[in-house]
Length: 448
Image 1 (cartoon, rainbow, N blue to C red):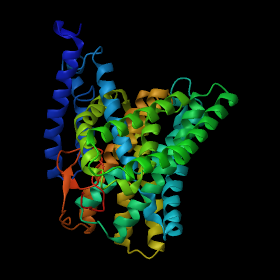
Image 2 (image 1 turned 90 degrees about the vertical axis):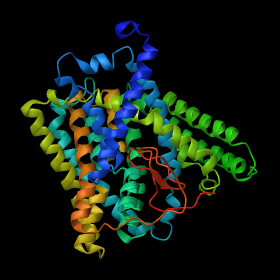
Image 3 (image 1 turned 90 degrees about the horizontal axis):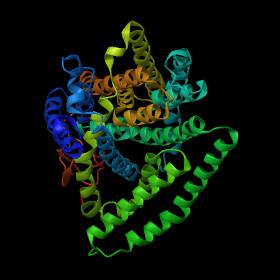
Image 4 (image 1 turned 180 degrees about the vertical axis):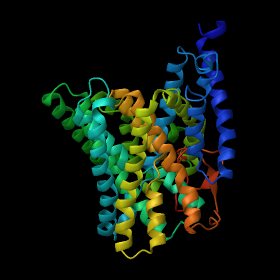
């Protein structure tokens, strides 16, 4: 039984209602200050957790979100997160890079390599104090370096759309580089998870081998089967049957990667990556839209689960100094790896600055990665808190800086739209749910 004699299930349902209502309020407020919904949703998680609400007498976070209800909230959050990762992977069309792979590859590589290298130096300095219990220095450094290097593809798409940068050189280059960088980051993260979870070299190579076999099976077996099934399915095919089939595939893929020993979200993301791109528009109304609606309801719970683990009060003076170092390395690393290469490629300083600002956004993708690190014990709670604050600050910087640089313009009209899973607003047809992060694709498409 939960607090005040109520069943745990009833308390969890009331908690979901609180999260949804508070999230809607904060999202509306965020629009007034040029912020994407993910900033509001990260903030509401922190506000309702020990960092702010916990400062009031009476242990309000513990009373509103009691310990016995949190596993249920975590399960709800996990379902929303898996569906979001699938839709984000489905939207990430690397085929758009054809014809400009060399230039995008160089820019994407530098935008990852420079913050990764600076992040490795900072992580080496912080490992002694902030590495999780049982975590080796190697896993901690690799993990934190990856977290510094990431750019949130979905939130980037949302910011580009809202800023009217769709179709511009800056917006197109940022989208392409973020897509390549995110795929690389997830690949590195698979190795980090394998290192942190392995009991020795034998187990590590077993996990890597199983992961490679899983990837080959997805590309050579599952993808062709999906193409045959989805492309050739009649337009009158039941949307409910297709929805059940795809959702089942997402969860089975997530189960497989969890069994292998990496993490369930890799399976969901991979299933999205191997989905046929030519089926996306015709299945938008019957599959993507219903799944986006589910994510709209479930994903905000992930932010409160995250916020309950963020406690700014634990940092102290040493933690605040470390937070300052983290913010400095995160911002300098991304700008150094993007602005100068963009300028050398022929962009003006203003456009190069806008490109660096876009690539500096981290959003929900960063929170997902940090949650994995905390679950695996690679980072401790203090480092988790500092990195979540870094994700919030770097994402919140984008809107005001783009406006200050003078590159924003009114967004182009959208011919067809669907609900944005993060904000409940409108987004271009064919877009994935907004990650809080984001949602609409930077390229507006007309739904079927």
